Length: 316
Image 1: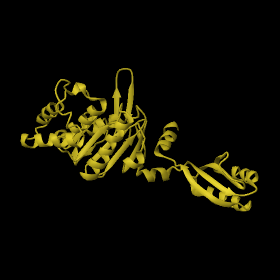
Image 2: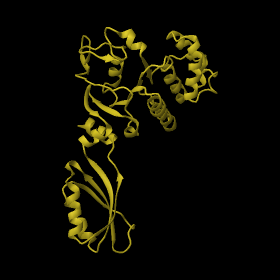
Image 3: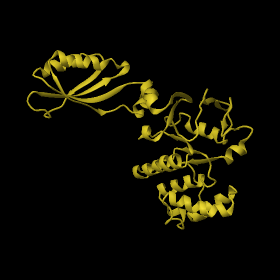
């Protein structure tokens, strides 16, 4: 699927050759820098835009020919949304939007109370929205997208502009309540990569309108191995010589002595390795044994994350 914007002076290819399949009941994360094409893709999938090439099916419906059915089966929440009525309360806003979505009244009232409870907004339910914090407003935004209880929820940059605590709370609710307990499918876009490995079941990285990586977080990390840092402590009288040998091992990017942390006869380093191919460690252990050193401790102090992968790929 693709999307091209044209004018008299220029032609911009916002999406090119995008192909994705998202299983039901998972949290799918789409990541990329600002301007990479995340919002364009989510607007195509929610029928707000039509593709210039290709087709998309959402919940079994064609986004071109069955747009009303698509919209009835999804919820959509954008961080850029400004459509709440500021002088109305949270309950009044949800009542209004529930009526627009034709949720039956007998279902709407209990549904509103249920959503306010999930998002910890019950006590603020009668407060005008103009007095809500950014975090409260964003929670209400997600609640509105869930009024008709859709099986699929699209969240476009839902934690944008939120403080760390509010963002963590919203992510926990999405992961634990919506996906974990209710079994909903969530399509989540963001440029913020904090805690991605624990949040998403599958991820895709979009760069300049193209999907360049896709899979489980573990599979993506395994496909592009890279730098990890370990604390290595050994007992030896040949610390200086061992350090030289370790530094000469192909794949050892940095060897930093740990000052003062060792007793007599103990030497410690922070060892940064490029683990591509898994060939580094045998040579590290060989160097340790050749100098008659005894291993006392080896532990990972910084693991490679999806944040690192995204930086490497987008910088390429």
